[in-house]
Image (cartoon, rainbow, N blue to C red; front, side, top):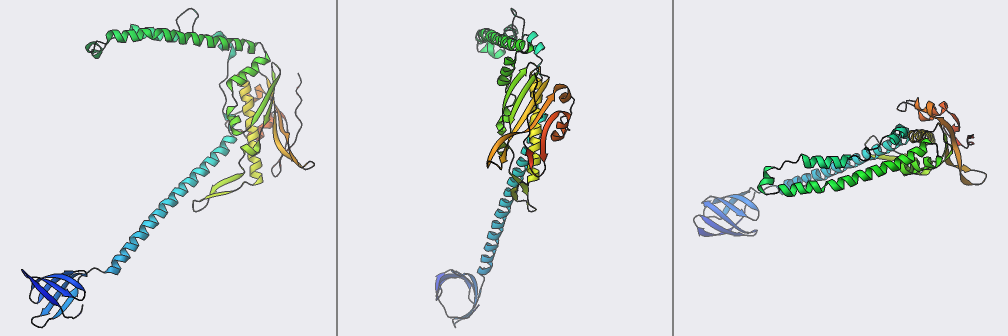
Length: 366
């Protein structure tokens, strides 16, 4: 508020235009009490008639308060954005840790899955349908023709004959599907008869065609196999630990952030050993499920540093002879894979702080 001198022009209807040092404003009201609206906001003025002296009080908003409120709202918005970003980062960290843990669990649980057992005697003796009779697809197509009943819409739009013709035309392709199905069975039957006769070349074809170790290969491990006779197989497993076993461990900090640190040697070697043992059991299960074998000798090979040559060399780190009867008696959901090697004739040298040491392959006698 303050005192001053002004000039004003009467515009009629108790409305005046006021001209002063601070600019032009409009005012309205009776003598002695008026309200003025100008660049500084709304102001109330009381005057002394005939003197030009007035008393004025401003009603404008507090600019400092407005600026403070705007800054407060901006800070709140910034903090909200930071909180949301933090939540997203924590969620991503949890997902990364969960995926890491799932991978580790998968590596030591490979033995729990296996192809369904092939009963070659049943496969050889059970065609998909009797030769000379209708196959399932042709029979279904003919039943569709027999059971066809035109709907009201078919009659209204005169589609009865067209619908019936389409159903009749489907019989030919259905019969072709049955012929293909029977030819596939004849091919499998021929392979099965060779398997039952113990022809080892058919064993290799079964493994190649059915690819039971595809998920193991996807992890980075490789293999070779051979058959000494109709009852014995030798399987060389190339572990490639550098491609399979993670070198760093992921975890969450107390604040929910992602932490990545090099896995300790003891944990790495423990995971490595359990993975090797799990793969070995999986290989044996698959071989017994698909083929009439009695024993499978598996040589797991891994890279080892040779201090004498200064190079890494691929050596056998586990050699185990697994027989069908003992393997099928195990509870695969509860066993410790590494400990389960004690059930079989095997060679393995392992220390928690140093990992595997090379061993000799078990001898396979024909």
